[in-house]
Amino acid sequence: MTPELIDIGANLAHESFAADFDAVLERAAAAGVSTLIVTGSSAESAEHAAGLAARHPGRLYATAGLHPHHASDWTPALGRRFRELALLPGVVSLGECGLDYFRDFSPRADQREAFAAQLEIAVDLGLPVFLHQRDAHADFFALLREYRGKLGAVVVHCFTDTAEALADYLAIDCHIGITGWICDERRGRHLIEAVKLIPDDRLLIETDAPYLLPRTAPKSAQKSAHRRNEPCYLPYVLDAIADARGQDRIELAQLTTRNARRFFGIEARE
Image (cartoon, rainbow, N blue to C red; front, side, top):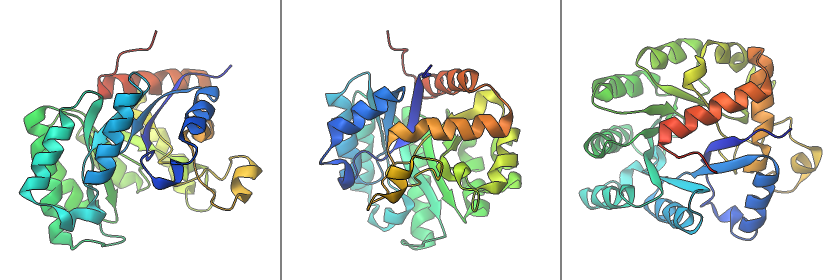
């Protein structure tokens, strides 16, 4: 039995999906991935994501935000554009936004400014936020905690940090998104223990496609030239989490799907 799944983070606006987009959706459906949240991480990708959601209502939804890699692009005009995008039908969250001190593609001060500005928009519009944090926990948590009482639902997407960071996020009522990182026995070993600490009602699953192809995915995917991740590989993330938590995979699928529908305000499909 293939359980219904929701991929809360798929970068389907990425150029690698342009040539076979319809086939990607077909493979996702065949794998039980009924609904996908398309990540917007720049003005261009957010507009593309919103357009995809408009063309596939009830199947695709979108986020709209500026990734910290692009934080130097932030201007008041861009903020106004994200406000407009966030009000479009099918756009269900602000983000992807946050801090990334691992790459530092934008100066850290610019990252903090863009992050705070987007949290302000989320507060004003009453939208959930889809957040990114890498090697920036102290500053990220301090800023998030400052706004948390005014924000609605919050997910720390693609969580790969420590159990201590996880405890901080759970203490301020955040959801946690887990990707195929947990399928990597080299880098993701710590997540096998940490994922056990996430309450049932705070757990969400995602691929972050085309990135983070699960190492447990079929060999044909592992050996392909591009090693592109797809939403159809979300069941491999589900299975790794179920094994780590000692939960039945069907029950885990049901609870993460319920969580995603509640988080993004998505109606159940008939």
